Amino acid sequence: MKTNRIELAGVITQGPIRKQSPAGIPHCHFVLEHRSEQQEAGLPRQAYCRLQVVASGQGSQHKTQHLALGSNIKVSGFLAYQTSRNGAGKLVLHADEIIDI
Amino acid sequence: MKTNRIELAGVITQGPIRKQSPAGIPHCHFVLEHRSEQQEAGLPRQAYCRLQVVASGQGSQHKTQHLALGSNIKVSGFLAYQTSRNGAGKLVLHADEIIDI
Image 1: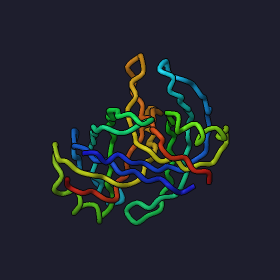
Image 2: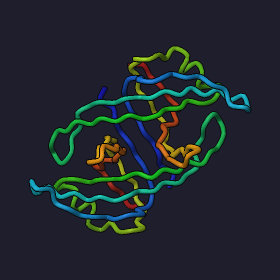
Image 3: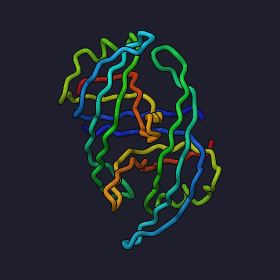
């Protein structure tokens, strides 16, 4: 039950915000918005989604240093639930690949 | 900006519920829960997520007719935001492929 893979193209609409964890691990956070036309039941349909993205680790810095508000990118990684302090959960895309498009 | 592709393995923890739209299009709805260990910043980490899934269209019926609570499956498709009547949005996985695992 390992498969957890997502590829999403979109535009950065919030951030990027760069932080370092107490353990010294760099993290880059941003919001990615996606709009496209997909096929469903043989019919075209609009698909819109908006996801929090995080890119973590030393290796991620060179992938994210050039990113800015409005950057058009394709992000690949896995999805995980993040529970905030008030218990509300949200899905976060943990990126391991970021490509300019 | 078309790329919107997700593959997620998991277990059905709610549903499946089968309905037909006013236009006669069959839909199958269920909740998929995923748990796995992923790699991030060179370190293993637990990944948990829970997604609403919908499989729509005549072609989807033979893919979903055998599904039941507890089925272990891998689902592929695209992500789209669904805004409910009260304006709250949630991400839904629109499935075009469902494999038993």
